[in-house]
Amino acid sequence: MNTTIKPKHQRLVLLVVAVIAMIGATLLAIVALRDQASYFYLPSEIGAAETGRDIRLGGMVEHGSIVTQEDGITIHFIVGDGEARQPVSFTGIAPALFVEGSGVVAEGSMAADGTFMASNLLAKHDENYMPRELAELDTDEVRAQIEATLQ
Image (cartoon, rainbow, N blue to C red):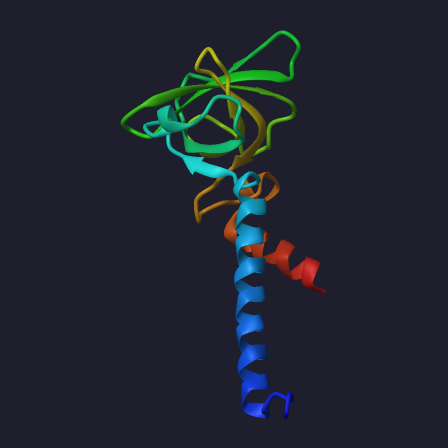
């Protein structure tokens, strides 16, 4: 009685084991990352967010909404998307580009009172961004500054 497996069947078994291993690794990665994912919401969608879950809130900082508390590092402001408004509280050093009317992505979670508690702010700028140091220079002076840094 011959108990050896034919090479053709050995390859088939190896292929099936490899496919099962890849499916298992993929499922394991999905389960592991599901709790670590940080979803992006607009103010009009934020009602669907769970209290306490880490998410990202994106939109425009409304004009006249930035209020700095007496401690100097706590900031309250409102993020809007044209349909809804969301109050946000942030304690820390805000990015230099964080100003009224600019885009912002705030990382954090929703508090029970409906305020978004941001742990990190990412300020966005448009394609016409110019560093403060170069904003007051004319075109020729900017070109000279750039050329000086390339040498």
